[in-house]
Length: 124
Image (cartoon, rainbow, N blue to C red; front, side):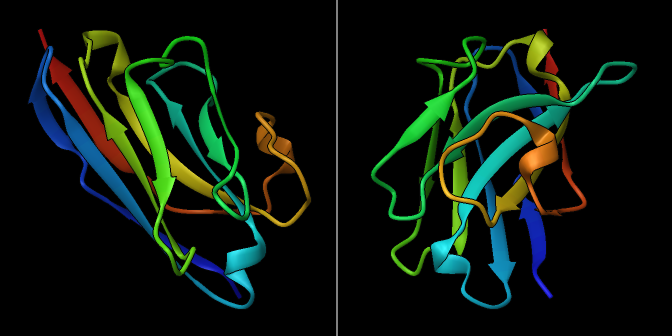
């Protein structure tokens, strides 16, 4: 059973940085695509970024491109989301997810395992 635990959320001023982490445990995680999504109050879950199994490919939502960076550690079991130049509109619950399929995906339905989320609040 795959388990994902996010951390690093909190309250930050607009323009500031924050780094989220997601520690994964379970079988063969190094072979999985890992991604980040977010969901603001009253809105649908939104794709943020994903990183390939061997960290040789990434994809980002247009809304965060150039501000957010996804990475994973050498063991491939922890994924990070470095967020810079945060805006009030980035306020949301942030969730990491793991996809057993091959290939990067922005569709939440293609991810198999999810964490409980960590809240990010950006004050303006």
